[in-house]
Image (cartoon, rainbow, N blue to C red; front, side):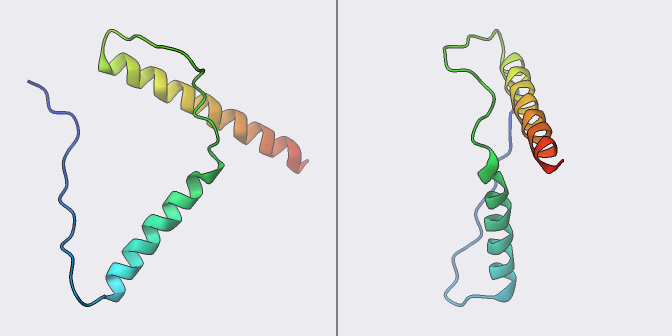
Length: 80
C-alpha cells in the first residue's frame, strides 16, 4: 500500500479573533491572488489515459511548466 498526500486537520474555530490568525489568513489570500495570472494550465482539451499516477503527474507538471515559461517569455517581450 502506498500513501499519497497527507491529511491535515483544520485549526479549531475560536470565538475571539487573533492577529496571528488574521496574518495567516491574509497570507493565504495573497498566495491565492498570485495564481490569478494562470488562465491556462497548458493542457489541451481531451481525454488523457495514463498507465500510472506518476505518469499523469509528470505530464501535468510538464504542461504547467511550459505554460509558465510561455507566460514569462511573453511578459519579457512586452517589457522591451
